[in-house]
Length: 292
Image 1: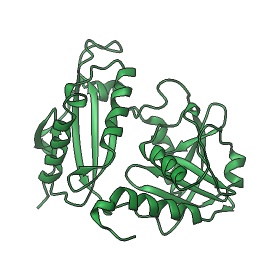
Image 2: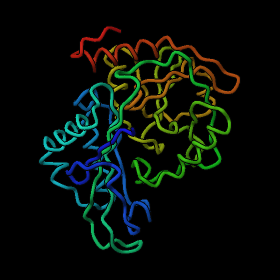
Image 3: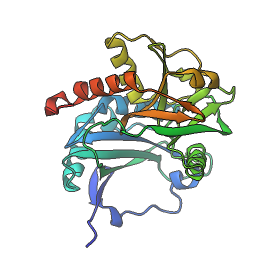
């Protein structure tokens, strides 16, 4: 018997198979939407306010009306997510996706700035962040450079660039891809921010390069600094910097840190990456009394 999954639509919990979009849904027709993907343990979402702050900032850029649920009543939104996690019987690691889309009406010019939202919750195989035992094999997806503009940092439901990178990754049996921008600088991964380590210094592409202002990117930068590492997050990263690095790792809010073993003929270590991964888990999940 298929297990029934539930979603929350504008605050109402319903069976996922009871929900259907209309043909004039603007996210479906124009990609007029955005989303946040959050990591949860039990009923608690990690970095909840960081995610909501980024979501609200992006909605304002897109000239969407921000619901009270995302500003004044964030506690109500947290309770809604906790209820959904419980309803779906997710008591360990969970993946929560909050999708916002402009309500129907108009063609390219919308008739309203009002929005609807959907919350989805799915279980994860791992409860906490665990460093991958086998390092990633990666390459550069340079067929479509990422444009650099005010929309670059928005997690839009129009994700064709990342889809094409995902197809390239699959066709070439890779674990991840590096994206470049219009000037040829390294921007990010398909679904992650990229960091490199060289001579015990840590580097990550600047936001002005067009990369997503990742929640885990920010946490790892602050963590590395607190551990005494020097972090450069305003220096453009070039392909030759990737080739010359001692270590490479990706970060995102769902998987934490993922180390890279190989890029083309280059092979990498993961000494500092391991240290940061262990410190990250201890810092975030200390209340769960987990031993790493």
